[in-house]
Image (cartoon, rainbow, N blue to C red; front, side):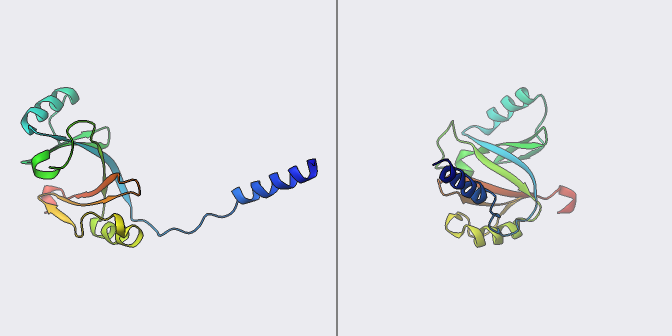
Length: 150
């Protein structure tokens, strides 16, 4: 009985050490951020300026964004960007990447069913794509072009 148990444990251990399956090489990621929605962007901007103790790094008519310890915390207009979002308790990972077009192709290759934007959405310094995971969690990837480079 002990010999059979030892063989079973060795077999289980060897399965755990099996080489991982190959995955598609993903493009580079720069940093991660999140955004929350607001019905009053001016009120929210004032609140977060007070909370973070600094002015926003980025401000457009529909978005106010803060650099928070290397991450990007944004507040977006619900009416403009997320009309179907429920106010409060709604956080979407918002990940900065270096090449949004490469990421669109990558998501088309590895998760085409989850792609929510069929092309890169561009507004001012922002370019983004949106997709969902198998549990319908929404993820956004964005590229931010500095004003001098536009």
